[in-house]
Image (cartoon, rainbow, N blue to C red; front, side, top):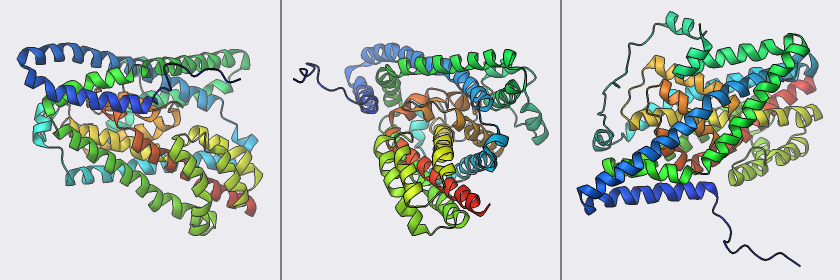
Length: 421
């Protein structure tokens, strides 16, 4: 006998709830002026504090989450001396590809957004104007100063200031050092950071339960001030995200698998289709792992070291698509709020995004949530997080699909090297 159906019926997926919140917020924001100045003032007085609370709650968790998860990832990573060439080559490939993806997006995204610039009335409604420098802008650092600033004199001050790249350098160094002291002293510290990571992920899940309300509250003033121009800008963002994320796979990942992996493009494409289909539908690389293992073993003939060790490791840590799409998101947010990103700032954004991909939590919208401190470092209002999160479904489908393609491409290269040794 089956249990009776819940009287409430099935719940909408969180992504659908967030999108509904965005649409409803835009509708309310567009309708408020017709109700008079009093209704507009009351609407803003309610919506703006709620939206600010939602953004602050996200920012509260992201810096501890990124720092702690990077410490744990490095401290608990298999020793390359144990896993042999696969572990060392995997790390090199992961870093090279995510940096390449972020740089690719940092170069291409501004050019594509310039083809369909955010309308001036939308920028003006957001309190900015095209080409205007943000109020807190400072002179660009020299190359030497930028390199010096990578190593924080005070990591706690770096965390307080939201300086993500120096904080990432400190977290990587700490994670590397912990396993190399005595287990009696190092293990409790690693467990401490594991606890911080788990607690922050739980907090983020609780915060995401309020995402539809938070996105609604952020959309009301945006629509009220920018009107329909903001909706057109969001469509432009989705299109550019899809084009550049898929383009990186076509330009870099498929040739990498064919040339470096010694397999034909047709064979690699056929092998990728089953896990890509799962990734596209589920928006989860982990859900696509069984299909990846089957395709790697049966269609590409990769050795057990790849299917049994590399693919699970890659699924947990390597996100080629995220490096591209997150950089696009930061560049778009800068355009939306009229913030100019110079070459040095774009380089900082690209490197920071590349390394934060290794600490993305395995939760819906995780790639967007970790962008909060990157946006602040780029002098972009963190309120952009709510807008990006609301339209993340389609970019996330392509981002996850390209992540899976990256796992298969690097696995093909390492599998060929494994067979030749």
